[in-house]
Amino acid sequence: MEEWIIILFFVIPLFGAFVMPLTYLFSPESPKLITPVITLILLMLSLYSVICQPEQIAYSIGGWKPVDNVPIAIYLVYDGLSGFMLVIINLVAFFSSVYAIKYMEEYTGQKYFYVLMCLMIAGMNGVVLSGDLFNLFVFTEISAKSSYALVAFGVKKDELEASFKYQVLGGMASLIILFGIAMIYWQTQTLNMADISYMLQNAENNIFPVFVQLIFITGFGVKAALIPFHAWLPDAHSSAPSPISAMLSGVLIKTLGVYVIMRLYLSVFQLNESVSIVLLALGGLSMIIGVLLAFGAWDLKRLLAYSSISHIGYIITGLGIGMIMLSRGENHLAATLAFTGSLFHIANHAVFKGLLFLNAGAIEYAANTRDMKQMGGLAKFMPVTLTSSFSASMSISGMPPFSGFFSKLIIILAAVISGFYFIAGLAVIAGIITLSYFMKFQKYAFYNKPSGKSPVKEVPGLMRFSMISLAVLCLLMSVLILPGIRDGFLNPAVNTLMETTEYASKILGR
Amino acid sequence: MTLYILCFILFLVGVYGVLTRRNLIKIVISLTIMEFSVFLMLVLVGYISGGLAPIVVHPEGSDISVVDPLPQTLVLTAAVIAVATNSMVLALAIRLYKKYGTFDIRKINELKG
Image 1 (tube, chains in turn orange, red):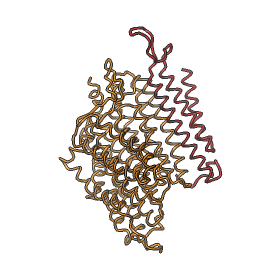
Image 2: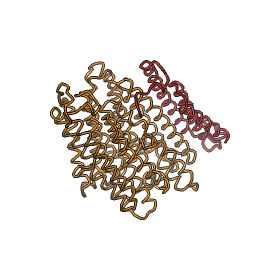
Image 3: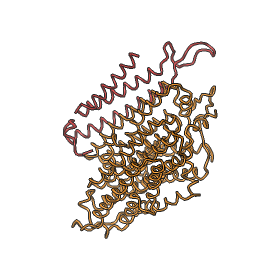
Image 4: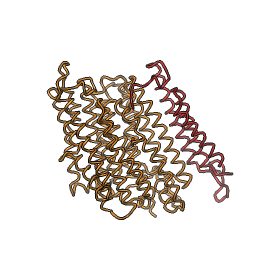
C-alpha cells in the first residue's frame, strides 16, 4: 500500500465539499450523486487499506525530516486502530448518504446538507488519522462545527434549541480540550503525539499527566456523552435529520469521544490505574442510567438517543477494565478480551444504531410521527422497515446469533475474569432492560392497533437499500469474531491498544 | 505566575456567565470570554522571556532565543475556529429570536434534555 493513500481519506471529502456548490450551479441534482460516490470511494479505500494490512504508516506532510531527532513535520499515522475506525466511519457514511437522497427531498437548501455532510466525514477521517494534537483539535472542530449546523438543519423550534444547547456545551468542551493541549505544551514543548509520549516517559513529574488526563476526561467526555456530561445528546440526536442522526450516534460520538480517549490514554500517556478507575466508573454509570432514561422515553428517536448513551457506557466500561488490567500488569488475557469486546461493540453499535435511526426516519417519512403512541399497525404496510428494525433490535439487545450478543458477552466475560462482578451484573441488567424497551418499540410501532389514519406506504427503494444492507450486516458482523477472520480486522486494532506506548518508539524510531 | 492566575480568573468569569446568565446573547459573550482566556494562556505558555519573534534572520550559531511559533499558530487557528463558533451561535440566536420573540432561555424550553 502506497503511503500517500492515507491523505486521500480527508482530501477527497474536503475537495467534494468545495466542488459541490459549483456543480450545483450547472446541475441542481449533482450533489445527490457526488456524495454517495465520494463515500463509496472512501469505503473502498478503507477496505483496501485494511486488506493490505500495513504494520504502521507514519506519513509526514511535506516530507520534512526530523531535525536532531525532533519531529517537525505534521504526522499522519495509519495503524490497526485507525484502519478499523476508518472502515466503520465510511461504512455508515455511505449508507446514510444513499438514504439521504430520498429522505432529504422535503427539506430546502439541500446542497448545503451534502456540503456539511462531506465536511463532517472529512473531519472524522482526519481525527482518526492525525498523529498530532494540533491537527486532532482542528479536525475535531471541523466535524463538530458541521454537526452543529446539521442538527439545526430543519430550522424548526426544537431543532434550533437543540443545536444551541449542543453548541454551548460542545464549545465549552472544545475549550477544555484546548486548555488541556496548552497544559501538555507547557510540560513537553511539543504537540506531536509520539514526541509527547516520549517526553512524558522520561519526565520526572508524575502528577502532571494525571491532571491533564482528568481535564481530557471532561473535554472528550462531553463529546462522547458520558453520563454527567450527556445533557446535549438526546436533544441533538433526536432533532437532526435521520441520516445525520445515524451518523452522529453511529460514528461521531465514537470518533470524537471514544477513539480519542483510547488513542491518548493508551498510546500517548502512561497508564494510570486511578484514571482507569474513573473511566470505568463513568462507563458503568452511563450504561445503567442510559437504559433507565431510555425506558421512559416515548419519542422514538429520543429513545434511540438515550440508548446510545448506555452503549457508549458499555464501550467505555470495556476500555476501563482493559486499562486497569494492563496498568496492574497481571492479567493480559482479560485486557485483550476487554479491548476486543470494546472495539467490537464500537463496530456493532455503529451498524445497528445507524440502522435503527434510519428505521425511525423511515417511519417518520411514511407515517409522519415520532411518538410511539401514535404509531401502530405498521407491520402490514412496511415489511422492509419491520424486518430490518427487528434485526437491529435483536442485535442491540444482545440476542444470539446477532452481532450485539457477542460483543456484550465478551465485555461481560472480561469483567468477570478481572473480578469486577458488580460491573458484570450491571451490564447484564442493562442488557435485559435494553431488550424490554426494544420490545416496547416493536410492539407499539408495528403490532399495536392501527391508529386509524390512512394506510401508509413503504419508503422508496434507495432508503430500502440502505436499511436492508445494514440489516444483513447486523447478522454478518458476528462472523468477525471467528478466529481467522478476526486476525484481519479486529486483532490489528486490539494489538495497537495492547502495545500502549510502543506507539511512540515505532514512529520516532528511538 | 500572576498572569496565569488572572487568565484562570477570566476563565472562571466566563464559566460563571455561561452558567448563570439567562440571555442567549450574554451566554455567547461569556463563551467568548472563556475562549479568550484560553488563547491568552496558550500564548503565555509559549512565550520565552526575552525571546524574539520567530522570524529567522539571525545567522546560525548566534545565541538569540526565539519564541516557538507553534502555540502562536495554534492560537491563530483556534481564533478562526472561535469566530466560526460565534457566528454560528449568533445566527442561531437570531433564528431563535424570530421563532420565540425572546432571548430568555427560560421561555425557550420545548425540549427536556
